Structure formats: structure tokens, C-alpha cells
Image 1 (cartoon, rainbow, N blue to C red):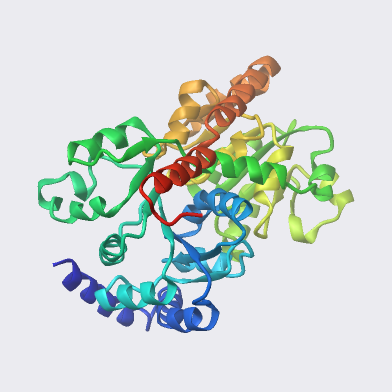
Image 2 (cartoon, one colour):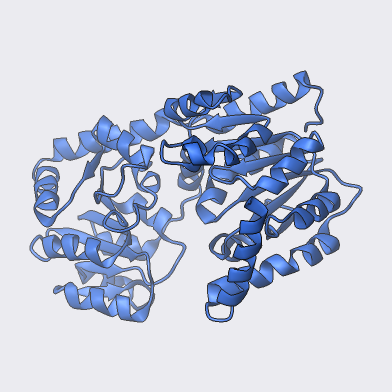
Length: 415
């Protein structure tokens, strides 16, 4: 049944690629993957394979890749992606020796792929459960690990109609999960090779903080005032916080929208009634005099957070919030919308007093009034956010130390 569904999916992707540029990139990338492997994989080398669905999962796996590469440079790294949003951004990532799309999970593709690569071990990051690849890895006795994975009651594995598919989970050598709930759910279907290690994203945001750039233009814009940084915002988010800061000009406002398209940027310009500049089209002198700066390019947000006193992370009025940890790691309170229940890092921030959920403008005004009217309240909330992030680091070291020990005990090939 699974393979029939995959072939129907393959047909659907082929048709959709005629009309959608993103799907077309994925379709073409998957078809070229074997050419990339043929060109770049050296059969005399030993490879450790990391697979990430998209960019977010790659960022979770990145600390593992870089730590393993540092510890064991004699091993090559193969990195595969499912989505163009991951591959197109990181196709030139120098932490891996080979980067390509993962060919669709048909039996023929899986057999061909693993014959060409012959990895000594594999890491599937968070949500990746490809039936044919995993069964062949198990058949070949190649250790495979699920890292930073998280499970919920509503997933197919834990439904009566998904018990057949849940057999794919038995292909993993070990699960390194984010929380106790995930361990309990897996235990309920007979899987006990599970360790709670937390989320490697906490390690990653510390790396990002250490690599953050100084941005003279942002420093000029801040000009000694308190700064509110809105990251990865969407229109519903902007309707709320722009309204507030149009009435509170004693703070500076930085907006880094999730979608950098000219029509969206113009919408923001029209909503912000005071002096507004765009990052790529202003000078330091103009920036000092401005009340609002729009970041109209990619790649700066993680460094911009260092200049903030309060952060807002968008997406909570849509499909889900974006990365709250990149802001919280700088020791400032983080505000976000209501769609955050499946994000344990957001729930953790709320529980510790460093994160604040809002569902309306009135909620936002209440939170910001507390934070802007009392520097002590602001500092304490920021300290709580920073301590929360630091307290959750260390997953990378835990995972790799257990992987090395477990593999050695089982007599498996390991770095």
C-alpha cells in the first residue's frame, strides 16, 4: 500500500512540476541526485549520511554534523534534503562533502542510492520516516538514528489504522527524542530503544549567537534607544505590533518580514506612519533619525536580534510560529501568536516567564505596557528567556557520545 501511494505521489509531483516552480525544482533535483552521487561519491571513502526534510531540520542536524566532522575528519559527510527550501539554501554548505536531494522513496531508488553511498551510519532528523530506505538500512545492518525527534498522539503511528506503517519505526537503531511524552508514545507500541536528549536546536542557536555579525547600520538606527525586533512576521502579526509602535515612538522598531516581496514591503511601509527606512536603501545618518527599519534582505535576522530589547516572532496567527530560540538566546523576552502549542520551546519559554503568547492587539498592548513601563520587569523576563535556552543545551554531545558507545557495544561500524 505504501509503495502504491508513493508511485501515485510521484505521478502527482510530475504533473505539479509543470505548474509550480518549487515543485519543479524538487522534481528536477531528485532526478539529478544519482548523477550528483555518481560524480561526487568516492567508493573508497566511508560516509556518514544525514537526511533533513527542509532548512529547519538541517539547522537541527547541523551541530551534529559539525561536531562529528570535528571529532572524526576521516569520515565524509553526505547531506540530503527532501524540500527545495532546504536544498536551494544549503546546496553549497561546506560542512558536507556531498549535498543532494533524496530520490523519492521507491524500492528501486532506495536500493540504488544505498549501493552508491554505502554509509557507515545514518541520521534522520526529527520527522523523517522513509519506509524503503529504512528497511534496507536495517537489512544491511547499518545503524540509523532518529535525532531531535518528537512524537504526538495524533500521528499515524499511534492510530489503529497506522499500526502497519508504524513498523517502520522498528528499523531505527535508536531514537533520541525531545521529551518524555515522545518516549511514552514509542513505549506504547513496543519501542524502548529511546533516550531523551532534548533538542539540538538549542545548541545551534548558541553557535549562531557566537557567529553573529556586528551591523553598523543597525547600531546607528538603535541610537541608544530601546529596540523591538519583529522577526519572520506576516501581515496579521504586523497589524498588531505596528499599531502599537505608531503610538509609542520612544522605542525603535525593526521589522524583518518572512516574505520579502515588494508588494508586502509596500504594505508595511503604508502601515508604519512614522519615519520608516529600508535596510538596503538607507544611510547611517538617515537610519539614526528613523523610527522604523524594514529589513528587505535575507540572512541578517539572527544577528539583528543582538540589538533588541524585546522580540516578536511571527507565524503564530498562521500555520505556526517561527524560530523563537534565535531571539531568546540573546536574553530578551519573546512574544508570539497563539499557534504555538506544538512548539515545546515556546511552551518552555512561557512556563519560565521569558515568553508571552498573545491572541489580539489588546493582549499585545498589555504585555508591552508591562515590559516598557518597568525596566526591572523587562530585565527579569529577558534573563529568564536566556537562562531557559542555556539550560536546554547539550543534546549534541549527549547524542554523539551515546551513538559512539552504543555502536561499539553492538560491534557496529562507527566513526
